[in-house]
Amino acid sequence: MPIKLFSWIKKLFKKKRMARIGIYGPPNAGKTTLANRIVRDWTGDAVGPVSHIPHETRRARRREDITIEANGRTITLDIVDTPGLATKIDFHEFMRYGLEEDEAKRRAKEATEGVIEAVKWLEDLDGVILVMDATEDPFTQVNVTVIGNMEARHLPMLIAANKIDLPEASPTRIRSAFPQHTLVPISALEGENIETLYDEIANRFG
Image (tube, rainbow, N blue to C red; front, side):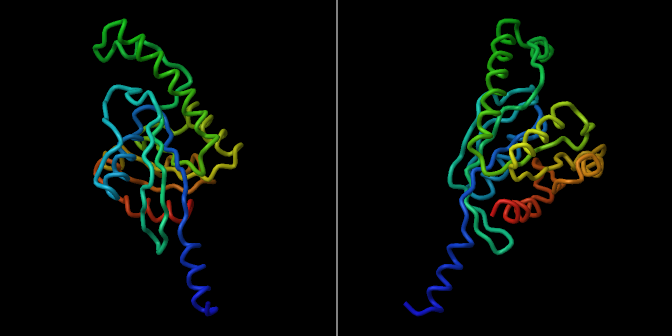
């Protein structure tokens, strides 16, 4: 085989990467909305339903072989949409959304199990997209704990400052809180700045 052809093939395969990426963050930050956006943009499909009720995602949902092309790179992702992380889950929180007590207790139990499952998934991931609500104070116990956990595991991480379509959003507040990590302001719902996120996914995980 000619050296130039061998070099070209080697370079081609080097550009392709397979990565299992987890989407993490607190409840209602927009994790499933972002997972749906990524999967829909590249396959036309979706991951799961979105709800205003916290902890609607109570089991990790995985979509395999999502191939994206950005920044001259091709990366094939396994997207894992994880339950919202919380330090405490109270069934009364569900009752405030109109659920009966038995249903609220069942959901709280499932949500707690989901958090445990989400933490276990960290063992099998190549990187994490941490979704934060740009309208909220970033200095929460959940955000600080999650970031500390990712750093301890040396997992590549990208922060998606979500909901910039809302007037009260302040992604700069998140950037100031965690300046050591790459941050992309986005609206997963509207698709705003999503191309920049794909570029950073290719850079960070590709």
